[in-house]
Length: 258
Image (tube, rainbow, N blue to C red; front, side, top):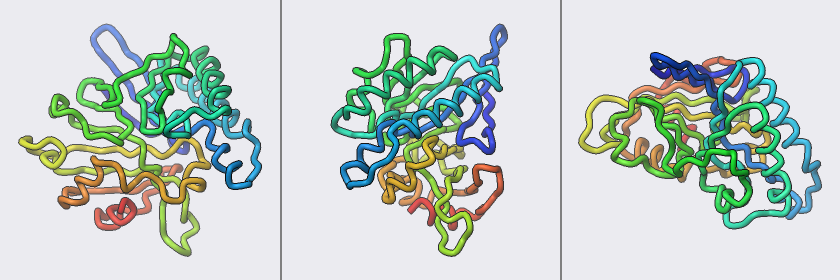
């Protein structure tokens, strides 16, 4: 059995896997975008290239220690550049994994920004398929590719990639990171199947990503695009990092996604 619960107020969730003889708890986070400061430097904006890395490492180590975790699952976009490896990524990504792997087992589901990330990851890190990893009836994926038809029996997708934020002018939480929970017609994702499929969209773990990437990746997730194009969202909810529900209408949430 696999159970999942968000770790409010952190942009992370706990996944508990329980079998007859074992019980393991994993931390799931997405979209760290280590090295994103290089993009700012190209725009003439100078920022501390260590601050974001140190902040994320500190939070991750705290969560690992306080929850007695077996492992950490990173749902893609560990690095920031797409078609290359920046000097900052060469230095900081291996360092990140070296430090974090001293506290828990690490699993990486590559995202669309993780081109060549295999050259940066130490041998003791588990690199999973770009299509995601499955734990019983839950698919853990980045979200930039459609799931394989071989996964049609799953009941839940946990994904990143979207960097969801609340977008409403004059709102005190405008631009803040949020969780999105969707229930969609599964036949739109897995043709030939019936029933519904739960989708959990995890906020970016890097708090600066929504501000840096104003036009974030929401429009290029084939999973979400298909659900929107076929009006397949039956229920939806948007929740802040502290656990407050800010939208529970599927049309409102659809506008946040489109």
